[in-house]
View 1 (tube, rainbow, N blue to C red):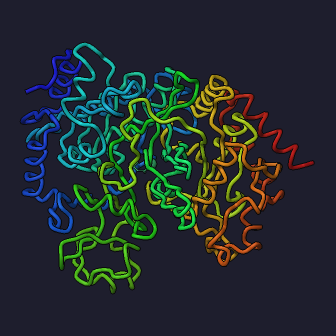
View 2: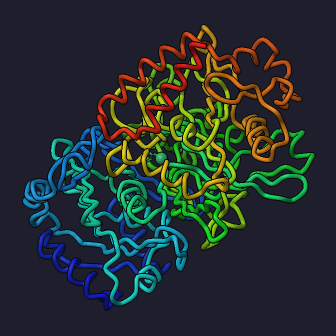
View 3: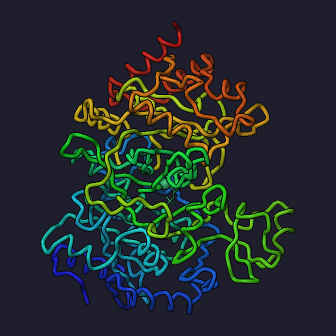
Length: 596
Ligand code: SAT
Ligand code: MN
């Protein structure tokens, strides 16, 4: 039975049914009864494995095919009528051509299968910043993940209303999970996403990267708001005031860890606390008071499991203790619980590795294998998070004081610096490079440009996107958040990280907030404002971060930066005359300052 009278939804679902020809159609109402029967069904077919319900109540395990473990950027397309509108950083195809290519693949693809129709809201139901999507899929795994990651079910349709046409249409079929015919296609002009032949996270949970970033960034440009690959955190000061910060880092560079940070002991004693609003995506719009407000459009965390432990991210680990779906981690067969690299020092002896083979964990690792896939994930409800912000469901979002950019850079980029102003900050964001991670297929550890951490997620021409940033800055004027850049990943000559990171990143957030409140002076350098050494609180880590190491962390090596300028000039060439004049001006200014 359909859950809405909205003729636009009904017509579109009818079309999708006619195309894919499922044996039956199930409308997902979001009720616990319905979800529970889907869980049981998935367990009975082996699609999901029930984990130890005493240790991990409500938790399920899922394994994807070894050829289907990460986002596939080379098979992700932005389909706009004009090639220029997708820009040089996206794969492009004309919409008609892509529809014509994919339609035969979807033709009858759900024969013998069930189509699930998933209504969902990105953002709190009723929020003026929220948007509705409908995903049809032949995967129960998708339904169960969307139930965690979004506000899913009947309420989303109520929010859409009986007549609106403003919803994102998502068609997904796992088909044969054939990597040769895998496509993740966004049609921003049609509010449409078509995904086929994958069953992995970012490729198939269409509310996430496909909608909340690729489609939404395009909508934001046209509607004067911003969709960004950013965590949102609240930092409570001893006086009770909470300051909100967003931060954009590429996938698997620690957004979840920063969003859930536990301050070092000294800070905790003083009364500092960090609250999580979001760990991956921020939608931001100017509020009535002129400031920039952010909501997290998601309702859960799709976090990288390996590396997550009691010490590195207590709150994330705690979030996974119930009602969580684990994908491609290892199973401990002694007690039917989960394990992944760096969870603890005791890999299970009686283990099933992520591809499904029974192995002796310690031996298997000693032979150079991973028990869990490096991009294995947990899908955990936000409400499980011990430090979830009381403002998490605030329909108006939270006011942002600072925006942080960052990436993985072994050299060149100092621990933290502040931009001179909004346009300079936009330039800094556009200039972000980062070493690649396992979150996408392809080589790991290769330095690539990843502007604003949006390279794989910007749904239109990257240079126009920078133009949109500049335009937003003009609107925000002196109410604009301050913009910073951080790098937790600087190494010494042996390749060891020289900044402790994790909870100690609080020390950098502290400086950032002090700068926002004009409480500390800074060192003016060619690249921006850097902390004066004495203004970084290193109490408790003086042994680790000696004055020499701090020097290294805050070093601006002019020669390296001159190389960076050369490289950026080359990088910007591809954008031709769509590159905003403000960006080239910033690059020239940087060069001049370096040559002074
Ligand atoms: O696979 S996802 O895109 O959902 C996660 C990520 O790569 O950031
Ligand atoms: Mn992400």
